[in-house]
Length: 325
Image (cartoon, rainbow, N blue to C red; front, side, top):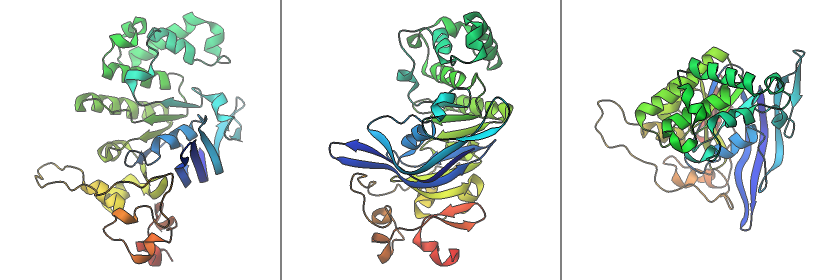
C-alpha cells in the first residue's frame, strides 16, 4: 500500500541539515501491523510524518520516492505521492499523534473535534452535524467509551481517556492506513494494555494496515506482524517480528532485545553504551560502529547495504556480507 525507495528527508536548521531519514527503503503491506522501533532521535516520528504527507518547513524531501496505492470511488487503484496523499486524510490514511495531553484542542469540546475531522467532501459532512453526531455516538459505544466524553473538554479527561479519544478520532471513518506515533507513551501499564488491545482489535475488525512507532520493543513483540528497526536515520533491520525476536541479526537489534526484562530473570539488564551520532554531521560508514561490540575495521568508513539474509528478513551490517553474496 505504501512504498519508500531511498527516501531522504532532512530538517533545514541554522546549524545545518539534520539527516532525520536518510535513504530508507521498505514496503508497507495491506492488512498488517508494522512496528517501527529505535531509540529517541533515530527518525521514527519524522518517518511517520512523511508517510502521512505532513511535510512542512523546516522538514523537506531531499531525494528518493514515496507513493501510495489509493483506491478511488470507482474501485480502481491509482498511485499517489506527496502532496496528493494529504487530500485523503482521515478517509484513506489517518494519524494518531503522540502526546495526548497536548494534541487535543483545549478550548473545543471533543464533539466539535470530531466534526472538524470529517473532510468537506465526505457524505457525513454533507448530511450535517446531526448525522456526524449519530455516527460518532454509535462508534464510541462500539469502543465501549462513555458517550459523555463528547461534551467534555480535554482537560476534563484522564490521560488514558484522551488517548482513547485520539484512537477513536483516527479510526471512526475506517481509514485503510492508521499511523500511530508512540500511542502508549506516559501511560501506566494497565492503560497501555487497554490502548494496545483497542488498536489491534480495530485493525482486525477493519482489516486495514496499522503502523505503530514505539521505542518499546515489548509493545512491538505483542502486536506487530513485521518490524523495522531504525538507527540514526537509517533502516538497519527489517522483517517478520517473530523472526527478528527469534534470530536478530544486527548487533543493535540484538542489544535492544537483550535489554528487555524477562519474567523470572533477575539478572541485571545491560544498556547500550554511548549515544547516537549527531545527525547534522553523521559519521561515514556504519552509524552504529562507535557503539557496536562487533565492530570491524572497515565499518568506520564503508556503509553497509541493506541485504536480504532470509526470506523477507533484511539487515544492514557488514557481518553478513559473505552470507548475502
